[in-house]
Figure (cartoon, rainbow, N blue to C red):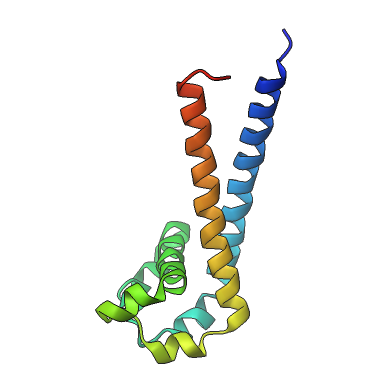
Length: 128
């Protein structure tokens, strides 16, 4: 049984997306375990983050939950500043390189999820 060109492309995109998701999760866990102290110290006046800080002791899932909250604050600061969930001074003093990594990681995750949904839609419509 041989694959058509469309099926080969579909398979390649799926594998790249799946591997990208695992790499993204690995990078997230690395940041959660190595840089969490730095992030929490810089965001100690942000209620949206500090209310979730106890989850840090919840193992990998808790760390990922807390990292997700921090990435949300970094990616959409206006939303959190408007409702009082973030402190403008904390966001201004947050390390720029770490902020950039968190934002890139957030958008990469959304992009990979969008590709997965696209592949599922293509499979559901039987276009391949």
